Amino acid sequence: SHELWQRSDTSATVADTLTSVSVPDTFDVKEFHAYHVSRTPAVRGDENSYYVSVRRVKVRWPGSVNGNDSLPALENALQTCMFGHASNNLTTAATQWLRNPRFTIESVADYKEVERQPKLMGQYAYCEQQLAYPILTSLRLLVMEVDHRTRNGESSSLTTQYVHYDRVKQRVLSRKDILDQREEPVLLSLINDKIERLNHEKQLQLEHASKVANEYHATRTGIIFDYPAGEIAPVSEGIIEVLIDYPLLGPVLTQDFKNMLNLNDGYWKYKPIDHSL
Image (tube, rainbow, N blue to C red):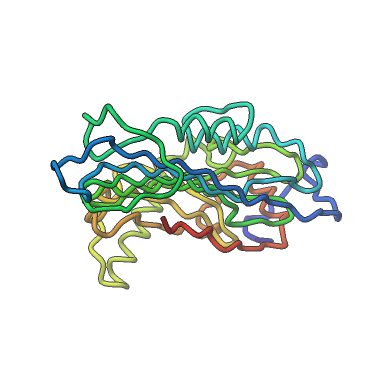
């Protein structure tokens, strides 16, 4: 990422100077699950018509980042993405989420929890999964992905969120830390220019974006903006990712983030976590 900006953009403060010492991060694989079944079948006498709820949490959870094992801000950000709020720790938050089953219909009031995953039968099985795992690290920046996957008996859906973490300053980077909010119209224009090129070069039929995507994540070469299924393409196409390279993003990135990129190195991509139910 060196030499991405004009010379006037590359001035870095002393506080941004990258130290030569970087300790590898550690992650703990954790899994929690809960299985609930209706006490009576939907169809009298049909053993395959019990309503089933499967909820699962599966993570590669940060144990230490750059040698620091006290990570309340990072853990709170990840929990908020997963559960809508933060708790004392992951186990508490996951347990609270698991004890509230969801079924393919709203009227299942009498159900029980079982130890083993029941048989999943089409319209009677609701499966829901929360995943959190690292996707990219570097000397300066760690990027975590949070996926919420559901299968409601008829269709599947996926929503994705990201958490960016400064490994040196040990803090979560918000949207305003990365993107200059005053330049949103410029950024939207860059995104639509890229969509036009994709349509022309790859014979796609993506629609123009009406706004900058809510979700995005930094990579080694640029920032990928995630558009949910159905927003700029048919729902069947799923999430559409639009990559804008850093040299084009110069005017819309904050100076602090440009400094970070200019001082960064040692990029490493992680394999995604297994999401099979």
